[in-house]
Picture: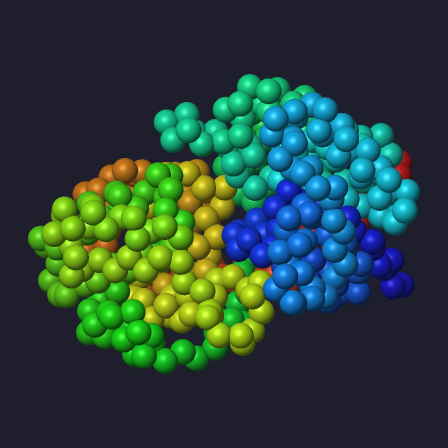
Length: 407
């Protein structure tokens, strides 16, 4: 018996053409649902929709625009704004008769969704990180604002279900009294076929000014204190004193060029390449792919991946590196430790441990057998995060939530 095809509402507070784990993740979920014959409809902020239209590209699935200024209004007036957003969702439900709502980002989308759909409309909320995690030392997290913390604590526990992309995220749900029976553990995904294509790694290294004979460590992410790039540069300075062969460290991501003073101060100008954001300048391919083809090529050109982050909701760059069959070094910070299975799928060092990071880097540099071990582990581990598998897990969640709501 053929199962019913679903009409799925996908509201979000951030979307393409912004390129991040949240935006690309939702795009891939919508695309995967469409490929299986379902009808996903993304409901996005007016600014994002306008910017997509300005690219001249069309998305395969339907896009609905939120009223202008909706998201910015929620930052100043969280209670009133989420009520208004809930009313907008109610109008859309009347018009489209969605089978289920899948909200992305706990505030304001998740709160508004729980307010509107609490009684009779099946729904699930996918928190993204900053909306649920809190780190006082880094000043990180929406819930540092007591108004937002209060409204999240009030409404998210009332939702039908939430998806947790890591165990660390599930623990955050537990902390705000969301019962475990409502939580679906569904990770982010990666587009494996893009990493399985051949690349001219010699030419790629040459383009970025990286010697082909040097051992290349790669780190990827926007520059933010939580990413730990300062720790990585300090570790590279320690590694230089003990490395048995030439090495280079490439750090790619928005605003990473601003680390140049620290690199120079450590005397690492010849060793560290600050590449900034890497995008595809040509018109080939989709502007909504992440990572860019050029960055995928850089992953494939590296010898090892180092991710020194202090806190992540997931750490999507780690699974991108796994898809490129790179051995992984990361920290025991939230999110990072979950993706590598507490050290089962990569080398794990304590957050801010410069010496531990340098030693792990030296171990991969010096021992080919160890590198090969973690290369094989990464290649196998990446299969878990194939997007088709992730979409199927969401479909299972949708049908279960719909069935429970009907009881």
